[in-house]
Each structure stands twice: as C-alpha cells, then as structure tokens.
Image (tube, rainbow, N blue to C red; front, top):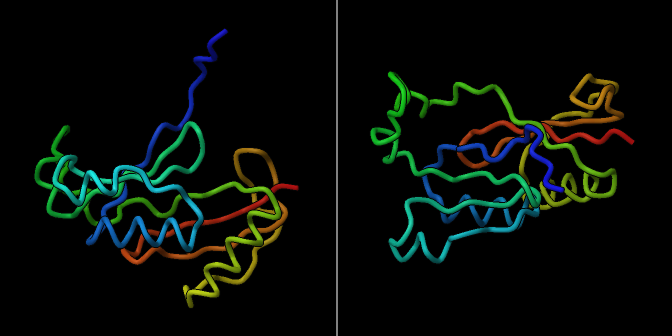
Length: 142
C-alpha cells in the first residue's frame, strides 16, 4: 500500500557556488550529493543533496532568482526570508555532525536542551550556518 500522507519533499536554498555548497553538505553535514556532475556540465539548473529517502535540499544558484517568479515577489526570496531549517537526527548522527562541523571550523552554537519540535521535546540541539548563511538547527529526541 502506498502511503500518501503529507511529507516534506524538498527545500530550495539559495547559494553562491552550488558545487562548493554540495561539497560542504557532503563533507561537513554528511548528505549525499545529487546531480553535481550534470550541473557542472550545464545539463541541469542546480544540484541537490539528499537528507533522507524522501527529502532533498536543492542548491539553487543566486543568478537563477529572476527565473523563480512562480508567484508575485517569488524572485525576491533570494535573501534568506526563512529563519532556519531543523534536521532531526539519531543521537549518534547528531554527535558525528557536530564533530564534522567543528573539524572544519564551522561555528556552532551552544547546546539547547528540551526545545519543542515536531516530535515533542528534543533532548539537545545546536545551530550552524552553511557557507551561504543559511541557518540550520540539528537536534535529537532520544
């Protein structure tokens, strides 16, 4: 049986250098890069990285903003109107992510404890930025 319940399919992140961003998300965050070779060859408009089997982050180059005018003012979204995106991880993946970020001298916030999210109260969380200033929160619940 197919589960057609609502899910998050993708988030579009504005980035200056999609190939460098894909490298950051692969090496520092541990996500699988998608379509990077095709992007570099000019065959696709942007690469992506896979968060899980159902969700990806599209790494949209800033010069693409004028073409992203699906709704009035849509092209103006290339200025970080989203506060942050939160990644919910298993505790060991959470710990490994923080270690990879620190190894690469990516600034991370102090830990927060018992903050509310989609699955209730998380045990710990922290924040970091990608090279383009997009803010992420990482958390674990158990």
